[in-house]
Image (cartoon, rainbow, N blue to C red; front, side):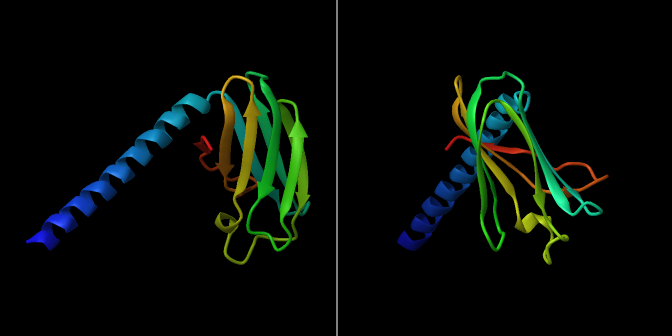
Length: 135
């Protein structure tokens, strides 16, 4: 009997945590999607990924860009509210672009630190959804 109650409590806590996480992600998306723009496009013929960031409020003081999953970690810090950078890539990774997300930690004068994540996509394909977090 105690095992059933314990299992029910644990499952309730897990379900509550998942629900809370979904609600927070939705709220963050609504709050930031009209403010920040981040895109990462792979140009196969030019052999690079072009990453574009723009803060429509122009209140970003700095941002740290990282491409995860690379053999040699790529990280760069920018000042200001927008940038465009081209990062060399010979080809699509063996397991696809989902294995190399582009993350950005933005220092915003109004919102504080905001995390933005997007997946790289091939030129001509629609961009993926941005995921926002508050570290």
